[in-house]
Length: 423
Image (cartoon, rainbow, N blue to C red; front, side):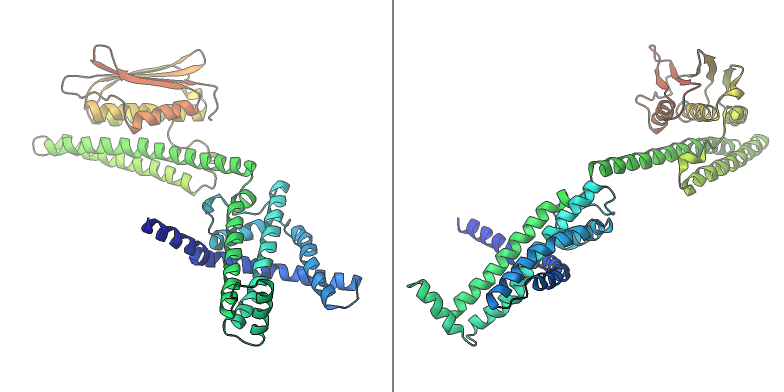
């Protein structure tokens, strides 16, 4: 029980006097400093309207000026850049629970401007109260605690009002400081609670940010697919060709020389494709860069490379493939490339069948290869099959992949609408 009481006491002390309370005090005092020009202008205007002098009237005038200055502050807070400045100050000093919810840019829409004006008014009002109590209360508390000046007269005044309470200067001074700390803690907590609602982005801004994140993610996925399909295919082919050359280097040097030449050609083509992909990264809008890389017109070179690795492909190509839209032809080439790379990577130098047909306004790609006892199947696929599915979906098509019912053949089927535009 005692431990629980001590814990609650430490939490209460930290909330009133801890680092968070001190940061919020700085934030509130800054609000009081921002309020000062508006308050002085209000004092001047109200004094000109009511020139009569008198101590009580001057005090009333100054209090009234606090409230008349707030509308002027609200009007200036309609400037769009105020939200960004106030948001930065709130993130640094107000210790908001979720600072990432605060907007970082200017308030361009009017609903956001009105909310910023409300926040600015609240910040300046509470800051003016805390700053005023700090400027007047701290010296007053010091006078009471150290019994300066007329402290005894003030103590006697409170003893007359509340007999039997045993008032002393130090107790009154500590009470004033405690009042200041509690006012600061309450005002800071109120601002921290309202900051996300008043300084946060509007629903329209949240939607725009989500769309930007989705665009960036789509671009990253696109670049990842390009790197995986182009460089991954080249590395797979180079690895198998290098292994074959090493095995027959002494027994068949002519074949080894041909394999090394194939490695050189494959590496040169991979570097060219890598430059193309890296060029997309330099574009401010990669989607606007248009189709890049090889199309179905380059299938002969791809099949020639695979033949050097031992993969023979029985090809059936429909006429008219050269007339396909560039985006469809390019994606179809990458799909065929990834499918044949999977054959090379998972089935080894096995024969494969490739059929590319135009049927009913769509392009159909079918790739098959045998799965022998020594060739592991590929249930679920990996990044390559996922990339094929993403490419097909981007063009409003579809894909299926998996072993046959008897487990002897792997089949990849993709269909792409010829007239479909990329999503």
